[in-house]
Amino acid sequence: MKIGDKHYRTIWLGDDGWSVEVIDQTLLPHAFELMRLTNVAEAAAAISTMVVRGAPLIGATAAYGMALAAHEDASDKNLQNAHAMLLATRPTAVNLRWALDDMRGRLLAVPQGHRRKLAYKRAAQICDDDVATCQGIGQHGGKLIREAFEHKGGGDAVNVLTHCNAGWLATVDWGTALAPIYTAHDAGIPIHVWVDETRPRNQGAALTAYELGSHGVPHTVIVDNAGGHLMQHGMVDLCITGTDRTSAHGDVCNKIGTYLKALAAYDNDVPFYVGLPHSTIDWSIGDGVAGIPIEQRDGEEVSHIRGVNGDGKGTTVRLVPKGAKVGNFAFDVTPARLVTGLITERGVCPASRDGLLELYPEQAATAA
Ligand code: MRU
Image (tube, rainbow, N blue to C red; front, side):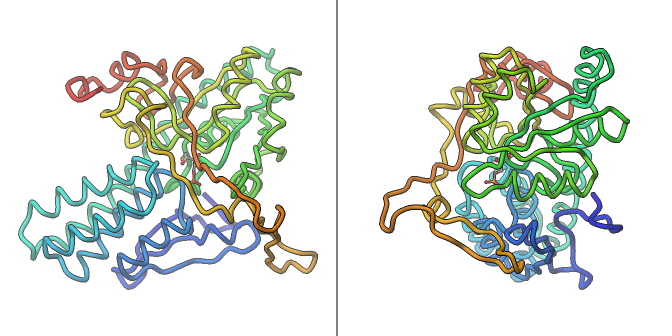
């Protein structure tokens, strides 16, 4: 996607041919700065501090983290340590484990002298695949938006509500939930996006609004509690969110608050779709509510809020009484029964084991 006139991905190989460059997402939308990652510890820190975030980008960064480890020392021991260090960064997005297992499996299978080159090649391939996958999600999901437009009589803009940031900043390019929106917008379908601010870290207000604005997609930022009201009053035609882990039965784990949006959508007959790449499906888990680990993050993300003051200077303020106890559950699970359909790179399917296996028959033996 473009920032100004320049096309960016969210992660790429540095000009030196071995270090890795990312966009520091903790500074957006107020500053656009790049960060250079030179070793596995820096890659792990970038993931855990959310310099990079979003399930697919976490996976891509982990893959490059393994490449940085191989660049330093491609021994079995060092690669195993790198795998463990990166895996410990964030527990919910399953793309992390998917990418790490893929990299470790391939690297340990070849002689040590071949590993460095293979690691960079495979990390680049994971990134390219993610772009193609997200484009596929955009094509399939874009059709749903076109149908909604036609259903409305082909005049008024389609109103889509989204939660968190599942756009190009959460992936390598295009995004998952936002790929259908970009595809429809680029095809000339009038579209307007309700952007949930997404407390506590405000990925909607900061990142989704930044992305949509840069691409010229009309949007309005709303507080997280507004969605139900808008749906009750016919102001939302469909919801599309991303997911950090999808169970084999179609339960969807995504940023905290997604479940409440799905409940409101269900109560108001608003279609609720989820965009996802295959790397987000955890075939080993059936019941997502019971089985998916929910990350709990530092309470300071809830008790404090960051922004810029009138002079454009970054500042952090406390919102709660000093010493107040806070809880910071980062994700929740929306049961499959509340999900209208899953938009994947292979097509749209019902949120169910049968639906997913129809698109991914090769997983029949492993699916819970
Ligand atoms: O905590 P984050 O910012 O990594 O959470 C991101 C989300 O919840 C996204 O909506 C999700 O990763 C879908 S990704 C395309």
